[in-house]
Every structure is written in C-alpha cells, then in structure tokens.
Image 1 (cartoon, helix red, strand yellow):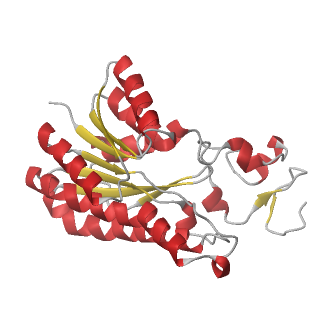
Image 2 (cartoon, rainbow, N blue to C red):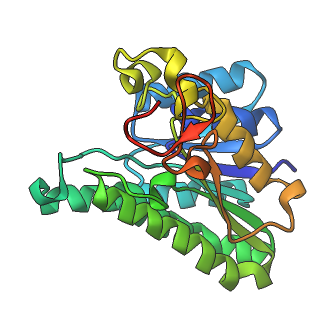
Length: 267
C-alpha cells in the first residue's frame, strides 16, 4: 500500500511542488487548500502524471476543515506524512507599532494555530501505526529580525519550537517531526519580480551566497527527504533552505568581488 501524505496549502508554491513531488514518488496525496480552483488544477496535473490525489477545500485553521481532513484520512485507513505547509506574512503592517490585534490573530491562525490543530487531529493515527513523519514550514525569519513582521516572526519561531518539543515527545512512537525554514522562494506569494522591485538581478550574488532565488522544487526536495526513510534518524530540527542567507547573516559580497563586508556603505 502506498504512503498517504497530507499537504496543507498544497495547491500553489512550495505546497504545490510538494504535492506533485510526493505524488510522483508514489504517495497518495491529500491536498488541502483554500483556493478551490488552484487545488483542482494541481490535482488534475497530478492525475495526468499518473498520481493519486484527494482534495479537501477550505481554510485549514477552521475546525470543520480539519475534521474533513481527518475524515479523508480515515477513509484511506492511514496517514504516513503530514506537511503543515500553510503560512503567510500577510496581513502585514509597516511596523508593530501600527499593527492591529485582528492582524495578529489572522497571522496566528495562518502560521501557528493550524499546525497545532491538524497535527493534533492526525497524530493519534500515527501513534497507533507506530510510524509517521511530520514536516512543518517555518521560516528563516524565525531566527533573525524582520522589521514590520514581528508577529509573523514570533509565530514561526513557535512553529520551530513546537517542532523540537513534539519530536522529543513522540519519538518513542516512531514518529519524527522536523521543519524547513525557507527564504527567498520564487512563488506566486513572493515572486522574483516583486522581491527584486527593479533591482539589478546581477546583485543577487551580493546577498544570496548561492546567487539565485529558490525554486519551489528546491524546498519540496528537502521536504521529501525529511518525510522519507533516508531521514529516518533525523528529528526535532528546522532545516534552513535559503541559499545561504541565514549563514551570511548580514554579510554582503562586495560589488568589486574582493571578498565580503558587513558594512552598510559597501563596497
């Protein structure tokens, strides 16, 4: 029997690439997304490639949608992989000073609450099976400052802390819990053009050590690794998938190509 993998936010961007990757690897994918049209389009693509996918449409922070996911998993008889992919920095404010409590609440729902809800709903089946892999989507902004997005950063730091703590709790049941921390993903949510905003693409090398933005398949590949047997002794970690930006942490390649600088007036 093939693995059953649940991917939240599984229609577009990193989630869409993950749904396609796991289906191509032979998994039966339960694709959960708030965008019905995008979910159907990705599902059609997966089926056209010979994969198997079931779609659940709705906001995964809502209890009835979580229940629908749980029901679908129950019909399939097992769940082997859970990818808690949903996350967003919007609604954003210019600064925390100008933010509003309703923004904090929505950011909480989008970045942390759903991770707790979906994991809590599906974890008992993994424990019963004595096997399972959970991969959460955090962000490099959980490990460095990000002006204007303090609440978003805080909730994703919570995702990484939850990942670490839950891994310690459930390892005894054969369940592994890890996360990825993306940066600079070229997706519909954070497109390359929007991130560049007219800047010279040749300057990418000055602030991304690998010199390019991330492709969605770059992130899906790491998720697939963490969900698979080759990562069978890896648990409790958040893996940055960022082209080296977190490692650089404020260092920039000099425009004259003569080393690196952490000064604002480089070169």
